[in-house]
Length: 177
Image 1 (cartoon, rainbow, N blue to C red):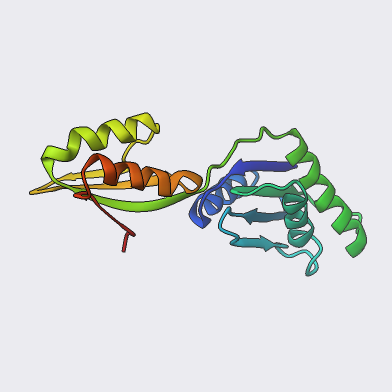
Image 2: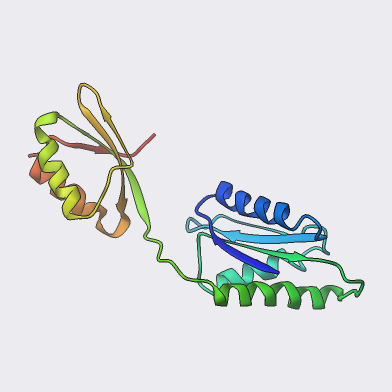
């Protein structure tokens, strides 16, 4: 049985895997693979011979040109030994068919930034952000305003330039950290 779900972090993937293990707790193997947009990946054979399950599943994710996804293939042992080659075909094939049936969702690469501005500039900043369809991830309304933003990577420079122009250079944009 195959299951695919969105996962934008290792924690998201772990939650999907744990849910599958909990739902089908009578199964013998819950093999998985996940790949994130930043290139991080992980796979597990979950007791099957090394390289017979997780790696073929990860290869299917890569072959489907996907990211931010986790695939779990659950197997109940029926008494027939498949051999390593059979397991590779079974796990890779199930993962591939699961991904074929899944709905694709576009992932837009973003860059996190911290924006610092004074209250008189908030209207101009909100107008620029609204024009680009950007909602702050977090806002701190202290002595000055601090916003955490996720800017689309391909428009980062243009948005920062527009913010700088609209505030005559008073807005400060920095990397989080």
